[in-house]
Image (cartoon, rainbow, N blue to C red; front, side, top):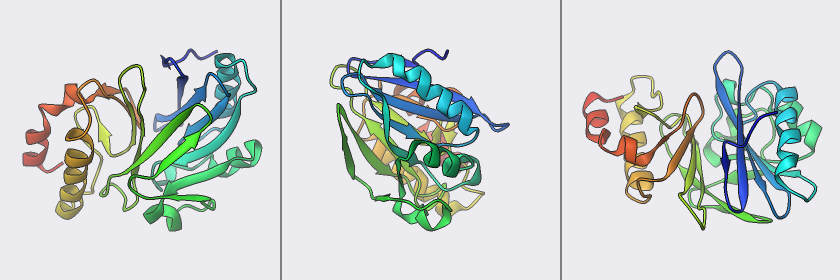
Length: 216
């Protein structure tokens, strides 16, 4: 059984890595209501269903998926989306500018600043343009501790997401990450990326100038 990555006052965050690309799949579960949000059904629907089964231990209510959010349209983040959504009968969400590139229909197109209200918690979409046109990060503001930010492939330990050497795309992503993330959120904000290990904004803040200078 997986253990909670973060056992917070009002919800838990669990995660597994799937596929040869080490994609992170996250499930947030409300302790009070059992409402769940899954972030990036990247691959291996059976493994994600197993993660949900583990997360039932995090609530005395009946756990149920309210929404499946896709952080961006790249193929490695959506390979299990169709099978998983069919299995759990949940609604889907993605950044409005990536919807056309996702084969599975998007029920909730997300724009910058949109807030989703679930039973027991709220999530906010932050549009980070550059890795893809519609890339989004998902922000959970814990009322009793640090914020948690799910960044997809837009922000990692040590740098920003891949913009394919396109200076315009890099500038767009850098500006959005700097103004919409670092200028707004404190250093103890926990960053949960789409691949690999997490970090905090404080651990990365001092490198922003280096990232801008190197252009990737």
